[in-house]
Image 1 (cartoon, rainbow, N blue to C red):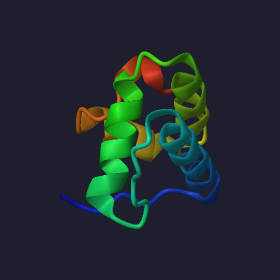
Image 2 (cartoon, rainbow, N blue to C red; image 1 turned 135 degrees about the vertical axis):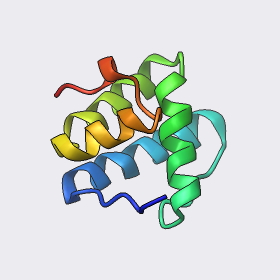
Image 3 (cartoon, rainbow, N blue to C red; image 1 turned 90 degrees about the horizontal axis):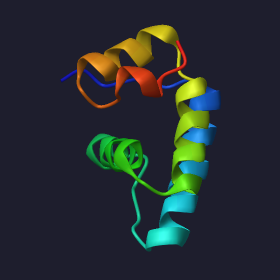
Length: 84
């Protein structure tokens, strides 16, 4: 599996998402670790929590088109979750 490279804006929103997830559910994700980062994205994508979904959509909105497509192809993000 190739490493995914996120842009600065998407990293900012991923950090915000992790902070909200940690405050809400008490679960930490290490964003410097690929597996932990993907776990955060996966759990956020299927979360029923309205606030988590808002932050997740902000993250998705900042993804480059190619990266959004790659996340969809890998089954990490549903096609409707990405604005592209």
